Amino acid sequence: MSCRQRTQLNRSRILRMALSGSTDSQDPENKEETFLLKSMKIALVVTLYWFVSITMVFLNKYLLDSPALKLDAPLFVTFFQCVVTVVLCWCMNILAMLCPGSVDFPSIKFDPKVSRSVLPLSIVFIGMITFNNLCLKYVGVAFYNVGRSLTTVFNVLMSYLILKQTTSFQALLCCGIIIGGFWLGVDQEDAHGNLSWIGIAFGILASLCVSLNAIFTKRVLPAVDGSIWRLTYYNNINACVLFIPFIIILGELRTIYNFDKLGNLDFWGIMILGGVFGFAIGYVTGLQIKFTSPLTHNVSGTAKACAQTVLAVSYYNEKKTFLWWTSNVMVLGGSSAYTWVKAQAMKSNHEIKQSKSESGV
Image (tube, rainbow, N blue to C red; front, side, top):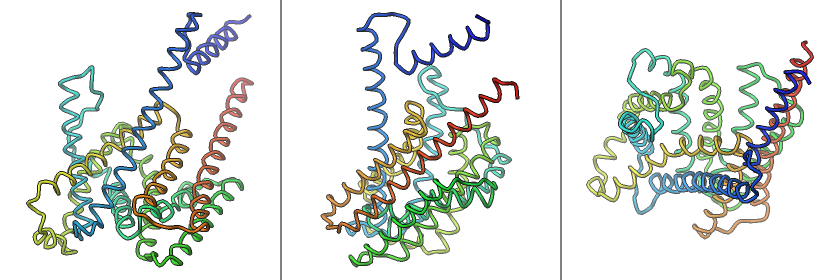
């Protein structure tokens, strides 16, 4: 047996051990304990992701459109959440310096040159978080996932227009199912008398910005040494500055000044909590990908969206028709199928490259 074959066998054995959670020991109790521990960690991470994501949506809905709160200042709410994110980045940076072995967070220091490099992405980022919140303000939580479900479609379109990447027929078919589900959902919301066309418009713009954000992120990451947390820091600092003139121009400063709960500690507590969950979603998303895989993360996100819709319908005591639920199933099913198709394509490309490498082509 050649040295190369022995190396490949060793790598295969190590990979099997990692996937099964086993060790060199043949003790079955040790194997069971390791697998159980790994399963519990994955379950905990997925549960944490679901909790943070769903809670963040309901919190933002309360802040943006609660009859009890009556705060018509969506840009200010979004601006404040960006401020909280920047403050939390500073806090995590300090904790990482004080406890280097316990807290893993990159060193952050404001650099105007890096800030300018990130600025094009920050403009898209502002559009993404603003249109997301505006969509949530004008549509119900139950319809929120359908209202901004065209992200996958825009991913395909923008990848072709900007990156010149083509897409398989199967992926395009999945996009067709998503678009069909979107239009059926719009039709059913209209039939219920709950349709907000401005909310739909904001949802479409949010989907476009989410797609552009993913593309621009790849381009800008080298400016922050490939660190998502540094990118988060600069994005939110830029956003804080850029939001101020819009808040003034649109009259939200006067709205905040006349707001009757401005001195209410409960209100500021909820505002801060919304910012904390906005910061936490980035962390738990990365955590879920780390403990599972990008494919599993997308499947988990789709299942979370389904659970979120059911919770919203139950919480707000809404009654929905069979066709309304069909639109949700089409959107979620099309998104899941697209994820699977792309994963299969990536796997196939990887196998082809590996085969060419082994054959010396």
